Amino acid sequence: MTKGASRSPLPRRRRVAYALTAAAIAVGMSLLALLAIDVYLHGKFEKSAGFNIWGYRGPAVGRKAAGEYRIAVLGGSAAYGYGTTWDEAIPAALERQLSGRPAGPVRRFTVVNLGYNNEGAYSFKPTLEDYASLHYDLACLYEGYNDLIGDPAAPNVAVFRHDSPVFRLTGYMPIFPIVFKEKAAALAHGDAGALYRAPDKTVFHASVAARAAAGVLDATASVGQSLERQLGKVAVEPPHVVDVDQSTGCKTPWQQYCRSTLKAVDYALQSGARVLVATQPYAMVSPYVRQRHVEQQAEMAAMLQRRFGGDARVAYVNLGPLIDLGDPSLSFDHMHLTPAGNLRVAAALVDPVLKLAAERSGGSAP
Image (cartoon, rainbow, N blue to C red; front, side, top):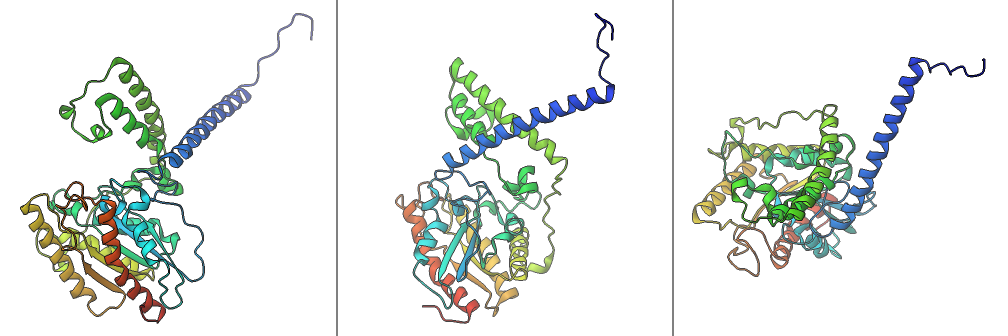
């Protein structure tokens, strides 16, 4: 090559390969950074109001041990323990009360909190499917509040974890978009609950600095949500529909609630697990709501009796009259329980759980 001659340009194919490699590295570094942030936030908020990396509340459980009996508790915010730390929620309290209470060959009870805010009976079956790898021995279904509207045209079909394509693809449940969005709402509007309210309900006016900080948090959360939307094109979530028929025998408007409960019980039994269905303390938001709750649970309990009466694998316990939700020492909002209220519910579940565990193992409950 003569002096002063310019270098020949790289072949087009090589330039494209370099560009794609650089883009892949940039995307990979961004994903690793987001993952590091997400793992950190899981650790920070796991005890207070969050969930672990696998999407359930409390410490992650490992491989199932010999003599271990696993209980999965499903439901909405009452099961999740809204307003309390993870170790004050019903599942954790139940595990402590079962400690040292063997049933036949069962030497240790583990209770996993699979509940989440706003989920109703529709979420039972997909949640049981999602966590089949836990090899639970008993599914405790604890929800009725979030299905009290009973509107056939707009049933509660929330399945929180399925909103995340990352979870659907990998089983890992991201937390940072939720945390950042709530922090942004708190800065901009005064409290995190503003994220879930209509705009005309805002009563707090943030400073310019607070609005700027909220914008940064909101934008950062949107990055993660954008990535999830892209993944959503790969992991497509089918429509959430309750296939109602008359087989449950439940009266209007409780057919959808009964049908969702029935599907969850059938799935758990087919998976080799026992089922305990529990009625929550009767709602006290108003006399009308309480009456609807009583009626809803009566229909569901009658359905269980018709379909599973005499089947030792299925049990029902009515905790409706157990707690006066007007007692501030037991409930802080006439629905969600204080640690003392959760402890009382857990205590009422001990004997039914021991009986089901003993029957599975061929022993007798102590």
